[in-house]
Length: 364
Image 1: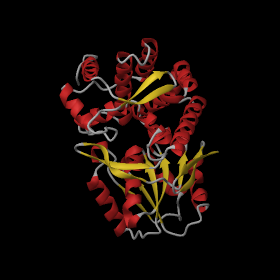
Image 2: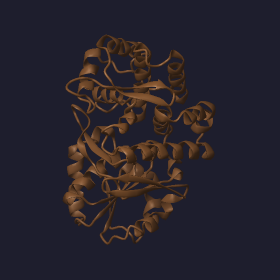
Image 3: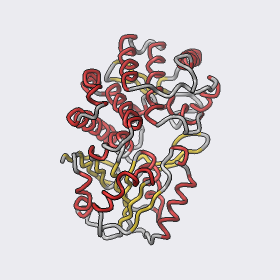
């Protein structure tokens, strides 16, 4: 089992990565040297597949299991309130430890609950999706959506420990697995040309969930995320590179009310749009853009571009947290392995890119 350290303002924490790591969770929690009660928090969907196994793992260690709807459409303040009230009824006090077991929605909601409940309780992540293992469980971002935009209410609240076990991905549905692969492509584009080339050469093995291929891409992605957030925890500079494709993606999720796309799928479309905009803006070569778009296409079919006007999509982008004084700012690739942050796009070019994406396939 490998240990990867992440530095945060509240102290250094570890990511434990390896096959079978989840079975070592009680021992890892014991090493935190704490005395409060442990509460597991997950969703009915995750618990259907992993509940019996994890209850056996944590037998005699935890007080209660709390479940909530982990659909993106339910990632809101009502779910936060419902979860906090569950914790009150379960007897959680300010010494409680919350163990979040699930994908990105579970981690985001549980993280915000941990940051808020009793003004802050300890948090551990056991991510069960590819997206969560390589991205959302690392770095301390928590939050929920508003109708006006994604993740607009939240907090920076790092976990005390992250336990990433690729064995937990075995029961992950194919669509959710592919959603995570898009995020890994992102890591290749923003800062790891070797990872990108590996994905080009081994995509079929990745999609078959070949253990060696998965170990390579997951560990490499975790290392990159840990490096970036350790240097820039609160997104004041370097961490912005992680938002490649996300300004478009968040708009797509918002206009479809978080019901059409898995997050990684929206990021897949967002990377296509961002790469197209980069070529139009003479930042990226057509050759490298072609490589990015081709690799995304090899992962599998994306849900079609939404039937939404250019004006509506741009309005949704205006609600993005990265907007400054009403000006849209994008992370655009310069080449495979390097991106440029804070690019303000020409409105006509941006509109043309959105029209091109809309014309790429039928609406569904």
